[in-house]
Length: 258
Image (tube, rainbow, N blue to C red):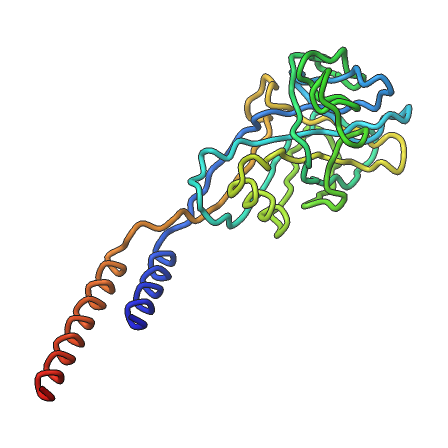
């Protein structure tokens, strides 16, 4: 039995090694912007951009992104995760912007603040706002959204008109692996900019942007559950042969001592 267990484990490892990693590009399932607003009435669910940072006047903006991982087979092992966003509007200087795992499910309604959109517009049913995870009857635990305080990845964002990449980190991989293993925990990320000074606000192309190449893209490399390989089948066959030989030897010994 021990030999068979060892061979089965070895075969499984060989199958994993023989299984090549797959790569998928995933567009955003939804995105939105939180606008600092005491009434919790502003949003931009269907706008062509989403925002993060602080405006020149001092208003906080926080972006939201969520991706559907249904294209990745359950049980897969996530190897790397990379997010690419296109910056369409920026104020004066470069700042670091971090991805923070969202703790609460949130919504995207039909509100659209238009091409500039920095001031937001009236929220519609289901929109995330500064106070609401889903307007008008579901609320964040904390005004401004519920998210992990430590970012899973960060990058410096500067000039507009360029693509910016949040490169794979152990934390990003852990986020996506957790969502894959427990889909109900997938609430995406908050994109949090520099909130220590005014004038850091930036706008990124959303999933509704008319230029498809500008829309958010999540690239995930993963190893799927391995199918039984020739090596796996061969080792199982060897285990069966060895076990049969042992049984024959045991029977022969028993006959001698009768």
